[in-house]
Image (tube, rainbow, N blue to C red; front, side, top):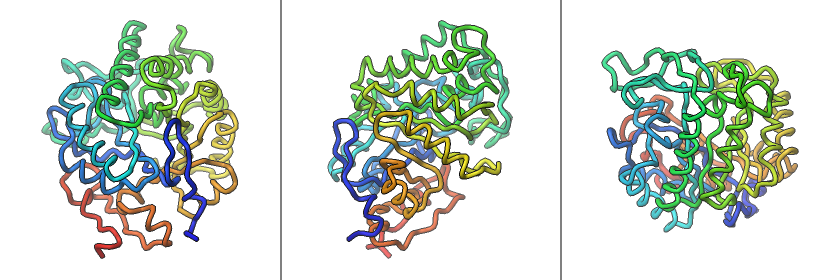
Length: 372
């Protein structure tokens, strides 16, 4: 029997029957071709190398020019972008794989250089994130520059963003994706509405937990009006992300979010277990408790992410704490990760220096076991 055999039980996600529960996490790699933010043959190779994942969730893909926050990230809102994703999806499907497109809007985690007409980024309220924006060579003083102060969205501007999400989801389906993952996590735009450290609004989008959840639910309802809900996943993170945002009561907010997403026929809920990547100490027991509360509140397939070893991932599945686990850095370095897990390794070590930007080095040149 395969090692970590609970990871290799088939799973049904929406209309899809997937061969294993070793999913590929969304991973920003900043290798799209500027200025059109399109995918290239390099992306075809990268994703097809990893087609043995039970499900691939793509790198975060902006729904509009306003939604961009990092250099060299892809889009899914122009015809050129749609066409550039088609060969990626075709290659993955030809190898028997399945792939969802993670659609995002970064909100305040951006810079004027990416914004239409050089305007300031937008958020739930006026807010200047901590840290720096990754602008690469878009500015001579790059690659890292201070975040500007974000503009508080008006109601009309919020309505426009909801329409952008709908357009992006339709574009993803035209490109041949099996579904979309709505990125409502990691301190980006939707999280900036959820978290009370950022959201200081006094209208129907601010104040109470119910109000701060409003945009999350409005986008889910908008997406469900144009794409079958069984092809829509949602990602949430109770803690973490760039910019230093937080909520004073994450247990209550994110459990309420999970409950509000239940009974909608969604493909899955994808939750990132709080971890210490941002340099902050995390109580793992507390982190796991929040995740458990969110699972109990949601009624569909439950995906988890966050420093899981294959052994721990298998244990969580066997204990019913998760239905599948998404792996990030392990999938960066091991294109044949499911096969390696089945054989208890060995595993390539990821090279952090090549995570963001660059060429095929550290992207498509990690060897499979047969290439050692």
